[in-house]
Amino acid sequence: SWKLSPGDVVYIVGSAKPWQVMRNGWGDYEREVRVAGLREDVCLHQTGRWVFTDRCIKLEKNDSLIATSAVTVATQGERIIPGHSVCRFQGWDTEGDAQLTFRGKEVVCFREDLEHFDIQ
Image 1 (cartoon, one colour):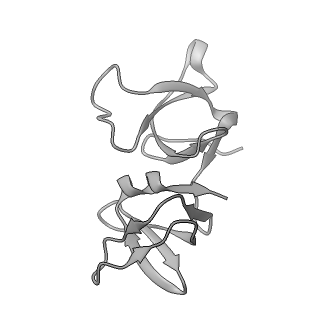
Image 2 (image 1 turned 90 degrees about the vertical axis):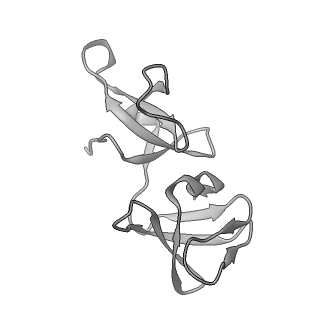
């Protein structure tokens, strides 16, 4: 079985947006992780919520993502990924942003903009 770590991006079953893992539970929360939205301040104690790990789908290399709305990519050229387009997640760049393949080309999407993608 895989383990989630702080900083991992996950999709929660029943939720179309991604979350970031803040911390792992222990004791009564052993099978849970605390997650927050990608734009939330994870340094604030009240941020996030606890969810069971078996409801989390970790975003991993080669996962298929579908744009829920148009997204402007962070790479040069101001390219736009139209809503309903399918991309493939390739990993993280050195600045922590998402590397995607879209129509056969590598593009970078700001980490926070992953909230405009659902996992397939």
